[in-house]
Image (cartoon, rainbow, N blue to C red; front, side, top):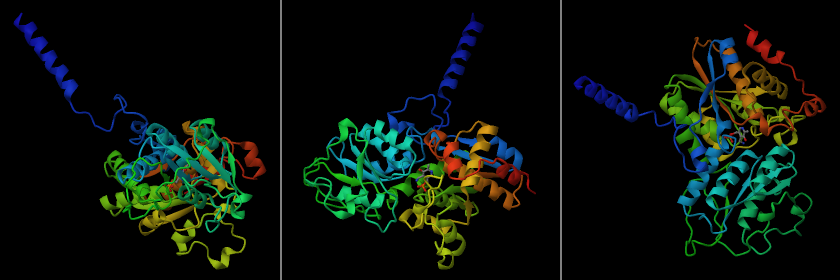
Length: 435
Ligand code: PMP
């Protein structure tokens, strides 16, 4: 009987040990998380088997499409809203409204978190972005305004409009329809029935300040307020990646990665992750994947976004109906400026290359990804080919969103045919096979 007692004691001990051995806190798939914010971040790093096997170096993608809002932008939206709350700029359930100018992903992320936190959302976006993003925003009850793509110097450009809407929030006639600047270009499409009325109480107007030090008289904290999230200039965007995505990648690779590549839309991802990785190891190579029509490639390679000599006939980003959404820009935003000092290189990625990579990944890996992910992976292959890396060295990139956000353009063969963009896997195969 003593031996049985010993056996049970040992069993009990083993059981306790099993129960109380600390697990890595980041692996939380078996834990209960609190609401949608618990479904943001801590994404896996996935080895892209086809590319890694062909190249000898490890190509690793941060699976950001697994965030609840479907993209890397969830991290940024969460950080911007948290920071705005902490700075007293908005309070939940006061009828306050978050405004943002976005090509879609950030809007979906903001609308998701806003719903859970008691805010309304107005999203202003160019009217040439994929329809499925508009549908997602509509389902989330955001007010969506779609405008003609325009240059940033144009008052009607979507980011400028979002700023104006936020500043005018609370004024009885929040949009001056008689202003000829607004007249032809804006339309209130896709109002959800519950979300059509802009609150008409006067409110405090708060200009966002990129240093993060915002102050105002908070004599009426429960007043509804308009908040312009301003992902392009907002430091919280950088912080989300500097304190989240970057450290996660460092931990997941045990600090052994040799390079990090990302496309830049606002620049927040590449700036935040890149700066964090370089702070841990100066030797990590950081580069951007830049689509057609974007000026960043030139900025990194030649110091200017648009060389006057080549400006003739070179189309600006907003003039190009490119298949790639979410990355590429022609101006220096606060978050791009945080990225520029740490960029070691830039890779120009054509629409045809992005399309080829998207098809290649489905064929060989079953990975159904969006256009910026395809650009990023194409740039990884170019970098892997360009340098003399040792076998097994790790190149990390971001898988920003999934193909489900791109049915109407990248994953629409008819659209590609009309746009004269070939679907030609040999573009990737030849590059992989080249010496
Ligand atoms: N991919 C997608 C799908 C995006 O929506 C964005 C954000 N515009 C990016 C990549 C680029 O990220 P960032 O804004 O951090 O440069």
